View (cartoon, rainbow, N blue to C red):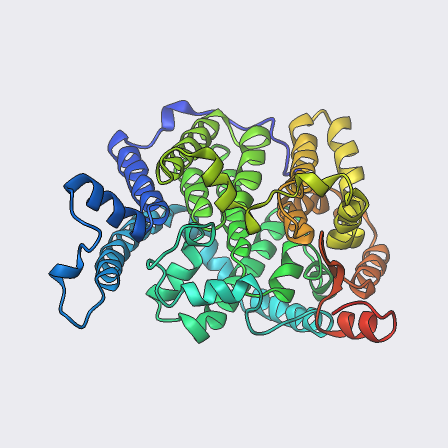
Length: 444
């Protein structure tokens, strides 16, 4: 099977040039500094270091201009230029990973299958305009570097790229769906590369589970891009049999997209799939990220973690009380595809591919663990979708065509619901929502 990692080579002699590594880490540190040291923090630091009064920089602006606005605008412009210079560097470093998949992306059949499957899935589950926190990302894309301290401002990559492409504000939805389509296509490329070719019905069924379902039902959220970066890193690893510059760059970009989803996905891959060289990069990048983040709060850990959490509260206090809801969320998020995890783990253990078995366990178990700190259970569960894809690759090819069609049909017809600690099970829009709200009286 293509997932056998016994042939993986830890080629420590193929390290990128030292200058390239230094430049990459410096660019990453600059990006993290840009998004963690918000403009008000920087202005306050300048005032403290230079002894300027609280009215600075009002005296240096025109009479009709607010001093705070002037400072925000100036800093935002500088951050904007520096951030996009770093993004260009990251894109340059990823050219070797992107070039091999370009021929596949040019295939008409790929896009035809993805779009038709998406249209089928949209009948059951879809929302066109960004909503919820997705609308906040849309607002951020208008001027992503005029920031406030919190957790949204650190998940900057999606809003910043939309801003760069002049697709901010009301146009953020167009940018989001372009990214989502790209990730759907990349998922198909990954599965085909592993020998699993899904029919349009199977693809449509797949799009109603995990991170694909939250992408359709909650458009605008950033974690869909984390899945894309994860798949790109895995494709490059499969191609070369070792980690290179692609994996740390993808992890760095994922941290700038959604840090929690990034740590779960790339942390699991660092322990179970990628070689020791990436584990060093993973540790170094994460430590650098945390160090700069804490520095922006004056190393006040309590304040930093409080602002990080939605509403300033961890879900740990009610995790045990809502454990049945957590377990239901796991089932509701993945539906029948969750069943693939069990034979996949058993198969990997029987083949003595223990790291692959552990990958699935950690990927899904880690997503369950995240519900101890966050109340939006379904989104946390969906972060483990990369592990489900690996499980499907290990199990589905063994099934007959009739069984595959039957399972895909049942999975598609089973309603997908959104589960949170405070609201319980909530229906998405689409045919699922119509059925659950009108027939079963579920909250929509």
